[in-house]
Image 1 (cartoon, one colour):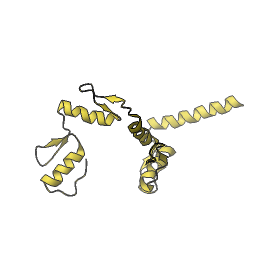
Image 2 (cartoon, rainbow, N blue to C red; image 1 turned 90 degrees about the horizontal axis):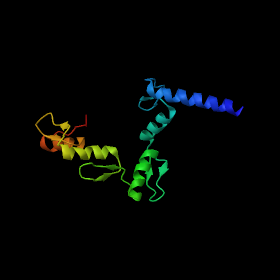
Image 3 (cartoon, rainbow, N blue to C red; image 1 turned 180 degrees about the vertical axis):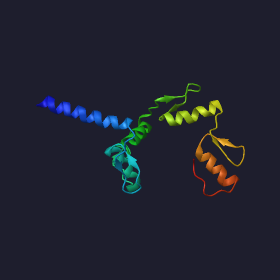
Image 4 (cartoon, rainbow, N blue to C red; image 1 turned 45 degrees about the horizontal axis):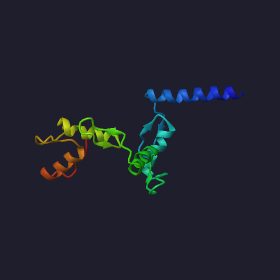
Amino acid sequence: MRSVFKRIFRIFNLKKHQMVHASEKPYTCDVCFSAFPSVYKLERHRRTHTGEKPFACEVCSKRFSTVNNLNNHQMIHTGEMPYTCEVCSKGFTRAFNLNNHRMLHTGERPNKCNLCSKAYIRASQLIRHQKTAHRLHHVQAS
């Protein structure tokens, strides 16, 4: 009997996993109507509307909406830096931050102003530029 439940559980998990690769998104947010492939992802998304932060850091009690954000935060307390720049050996807690940092070495500036020749590493830098240099006040990252 136990092996039957195990087999059913494996089949259920396989079906659930296959939805990740399919474009099927049967779960819809009742607030903004965004669609998701799993109940878990829908529930995680709903927290953006509710502001719920169910995951707390055991060291400093700061709260987070996802367990991934909590795990990234906890590296502050442990000093762990799993991502290291190959050029200057600077360490980072997130791959995203390392990728942004690498642009300092390569000179890449992917965020270009459509009103002048200025370009920036971060979208936030471009937005600040457009608000101050071009007096645009309703600028959003593209």
